[in-house]
Length: 366
Image (cartoon, rainbow, N blue to C red; front, top):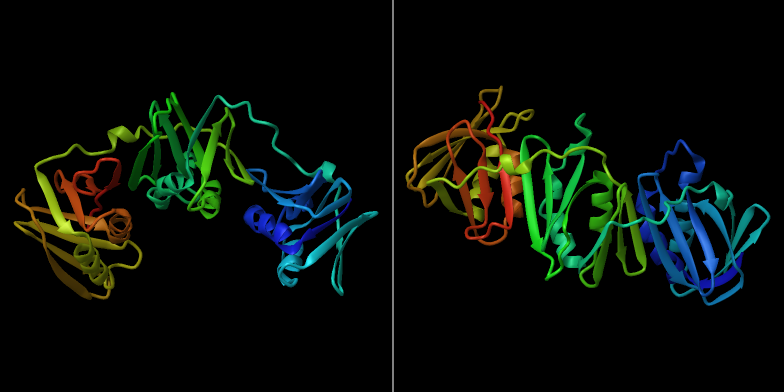
């Protein structure tokens, strides 16, 4: 392998893929990135066996095509430290990769490209296209409800469901749930459910841009998303996601309309003195007002009140304040709608008049 490329054409794809390179690996080759130089481009691949990222950069001249793996973070740090627009000469000498730029020279150890695990081409059962901003919106409105290291492994990810002309994202940790659905602009995507693991979702959020299109291919074991020069592939979580439709409460007569900011700020103030372990607050819904109370084992208490529009039953109910705050922060618009059933049932939080994004929070005993 021997080529010359500008610093930026190496740095940009490296920054795109480096997120999946773990610092501590059981397999040494997983700390490396795979470099493949052919025609007028260099392809850089990183994987942790669950998520694979591939990004491309242009080369100025390619004398000898080839492939090799090099330590990912060291290669990134070298490229980052070079001057802007600097030409970088890369050449393979035995089992060492020489990197030259101006008066700087670096020699990196390598491992054979044949040792690097690469995901085979996906035999996609279906492909849909949507704007990257729309896909980012879908993840942004739901990802915070994913579980972390739950024994119910299927909760440690995000459900992507296609339903004819709609695509839906759903996440739950068993105590709360977020749902967001979007129109596919006339595409009929059929019916399909897959669960993307947590790490894949977080990487995708980092990669999605303000412009451009995302092409989503769903296979039997993998999902692949093409984002221009970046290709994301992730294994799917093999498990049955809960029937989320049964969890979402029906609309009742106990509907609270409130200023999202006023409600959120009052909860934040009360949360200061809530129990640090359980984060519980007690909400008392009265005619046109909500009383918020919190206390902790040190016998400290906080009380606050918010004016709202409410004419339903008087209900006293406890919630984890962090779950309420996360949901309120994700609701679009100045107003928020809270639907209540009774003191022992989940509440439904959404933007008034909009059903495409919903949040469910289970009550807690205080």
